[in-house]
Length: 397
Ligand SMILES: [Zn+2]
Image (cartoon, rainbow, N blue to C red; front, side):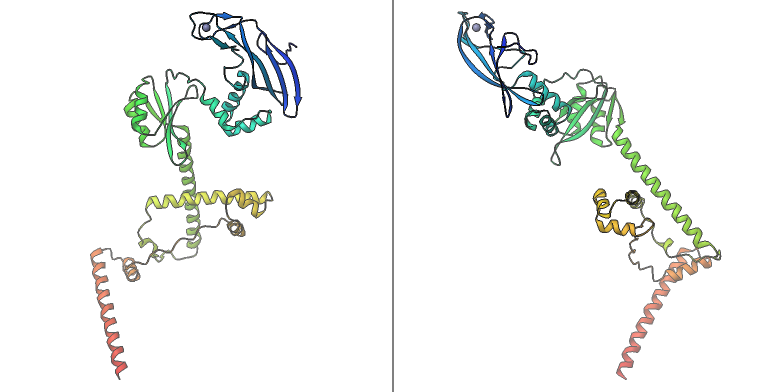
């Protein structure tokens, strides 16, 4: 038997044998402490009842798995008033009763899980010679004792998915300690408001732009200032900047086109039909410009990647676009604008040239223009009827 500083063991435990196998190290350990305490009455006993073996996983040694084969004992409890007659030897701070791994190995898994996640933790653990599963890592994290929330001054609130697309909850974060303080089973305003009422210290609530958490903060923490969280501020700013830049771009292009078309032309220009059309609603224009900004950004990325010598297929994969689109876009040396859809025909279109002409002549009386339009329509209908009659009579002859 040897006492080794290489494998620290609790007092009274000695290494009996070390075996090197294909799967790692198998270390036989025996407990030699002459007495043990009854877990129920805490009386010390030296009467050994029997011996038995426990197989435990321990922290790996230089990348090798370590299996401990522990020979421990059962003791008689000699306290006449204690209902426990026989008890197993306890090894506190080394292994929990009935556990299949040592406490230090369990702590390793918990640390890996806390630093990564279930799946990532299992992958990382494999590199260290630890065989485990993501469920096992998650169980260790779930088994950690709850940290008392204490006072929360700056609260961050947002929704998260227990199951993506199906079941959403609310996550509450202490923005000073950057720790999750609680999870709520749904994202209802009332549930969050109830939680906030139990934390009257809250002075700032950082939230998304939705109405639920705004209402929760107003009801549950009316004393607190509500602010937009950094993620949503950045998101809104990005959207607004894209829109602004897209609008500038559109205006610059439109201005340069107008300047070019005006050069060398008489000032008395003909009004086109376009101004007579109803204006595009602001929301539609906004959406169009945002889409254009996105397209433009992708086009620039595409040009950049091509300059780096990337092939069409690789660019398509990188930008999640079809190869055909990449080829089409790169064929032109400038950004390919989306073709504007043709607008629907209007009943006014037939009369537009006449009305435009009259407008240019200086007629600004709407009623007069309308009467002229009606007169024109009647004349057109009359001439159509006359033509039809003439056609019929000429066929009879
Ligand atoms: Zn006892």
